[in-house]
Length: 118
Image 1 (cartoon, rainbow, N blue to C red):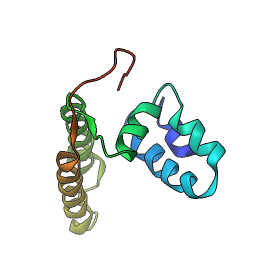
Image 2 (image 1 turned 120 degrees about the vertical axis):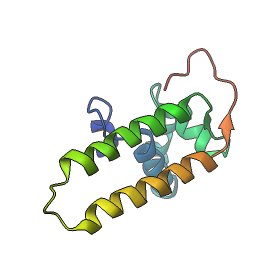
Image 3 (image 1 turned 90 degrees about the vertical axis):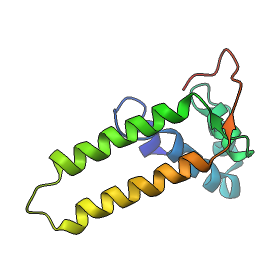
Image 4 (image 1 turned 180 degrees about the vertical axis):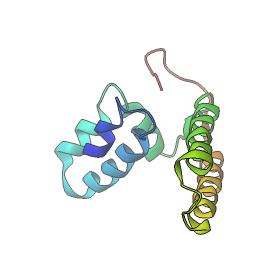
């Protein structure tokens, strides 16, 4: 949960997926923290929709995938040194492809409340 909170101001560090994971853990261990995550103004609606199987907003998918691939390509083309083992770049691309498939398979939430932001 703390890493997810750090991801709010830090670009490239995911917030919502980490809060979904924290909510799943807290659902079994701490009702108080689970309620805090679900009722949070910033990301609670997204976590709740995902946990209830409603999906993610349709307009958010291109933003999620675009941001993810910008950082993946940055890592593969610039950040991972050329002398690093080839498996590091290959694994990064493979995990990004798996993440893309995962995001595309999540149901799309068609309508958003006027208060919901992503």
